[in-house]
Structure formats: structure tokens, C-alpha cells
Image (cartoon, rainbow, N blue to C red; front, top):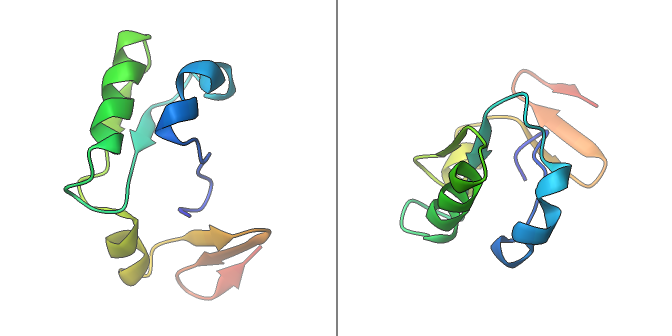
Length: 83
């Protein structure tokens, strides 16, 4: 998953809105640019007053670009720094 992301499946989003911070923008992402779940998430979030946008690519492109990801308790950040 993208480092720092809060993974919420689209079918749980409505009931888990309280977990999402309202003081910063929210970026929804999915498997790829043609996955509709991120679009659905953005629509729901904006209707509820969140500042939301969709990641134009998907997670595989993010990961392939070497951008920060995490798996469980390990975070990988470009440049070799890990948490």
C-alpha cells in the first residue's frame, strides 16, 4: 500500500468516514487508471464535505516508480530510508 495510506475498501467507506481526517486532502487510489472504485470513493467523499481527488494512475504504477510504499509494519521510501 502507499506509505501512510489508510486502506478502506469502497464497501466500508460510508461507515468508516470518521476515520478519515478532514483537515487535509484525501487521495483515493485503486489498482489502475480504469478501476472505478477510486472514482466512487471520490464522489462519496466530496458529497460528505471532504477535499478528495483520485490518483491518476494506480498502485502498481506508484510502486513501479519507486515511490513510498509499506507492507505491514515496514515502510520503504525511495533512497533507502525505512521505518
